[in-house]
Image (cartoon, rainbow, N blue to C red; front, side, top):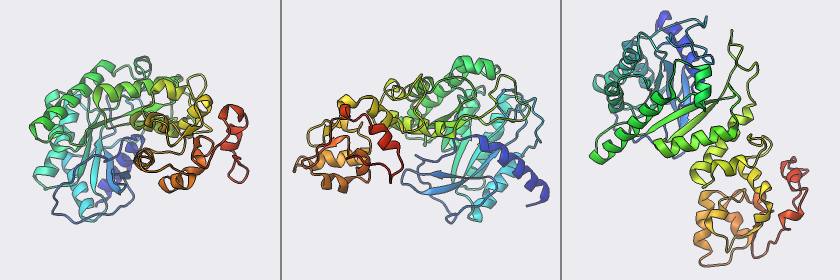
Length: 402
């Protein structure tokens, strides 16, 4: 790699680090004539597949030049950051060379807006098209699509990419107007709806179009939006656009920032709690209202995870009898995951479960002790345990639940 290309890579890999939606879950396997791969450093992000494998993706921007002037973005038009731009062929060459050297297993490509949304989208689409058609690239490709671009270009991008994503960026329309007035929430929603329709049609017609679905990203902490509002937006996105994932990125203060932005980033634990809450929305049947009720003033509890926070606010529902409780309520027991509950539902048809039986089905048995009744375990009613929260958040050596 020559020095000029290496300098571009350093700049545009660093510029891409603010996008959290870099994952490959849900992508089908392709037949490939290239050997398996490992990982490296510059521009490499690690993503996890549904079976738990960690894979490496080249994560870069096509360019960090941008026509837009979003207040929260380091690459905004008015920013004084060092600029760089790849050509289509340079991205193709980098991806193929990294792939052959076992550095990566795929590409995550985003971009600032140059010339026009259509021009930028066409350039990114051509990267994917050339990789597939001219290089026979069988690795994973994730393209960050531009909602203002022509639907035809997004259609073409979906033919060559495994996943498409459009960042909603901010959790409310009002925040978008204040911090990114050149972006339009309705345009973003329309583009996401069109991608959803194309994915559905492609499945019915048994043809390729973004087979790993679509995802999005929400920036947290750049405005005063509460976690409750973020979760309402997330729930609506999953319901209306069948997204595979919503990613959360804690706002990071940037040089020469606008006066309307906060001076400090939000606690990183807030981002973590939102991911845990997202899991409860998708797999545990919780509503946004239930999750946010575990905290105060619309914000999630930073000391304990959202499931435990909800249980502590609803002590009158516990403890539950593992041998008789319905699945919906077992999903709300701290320490019990979906797989463990499915096993419990199967096993209890044939026998009455003891604590040791539950311990064999889940690794979270210590967390569930105050919340679950078994044949040989009868904890005190939680309404009588006013010290329970303190014990659950205390260091392990200090905590005692009996």
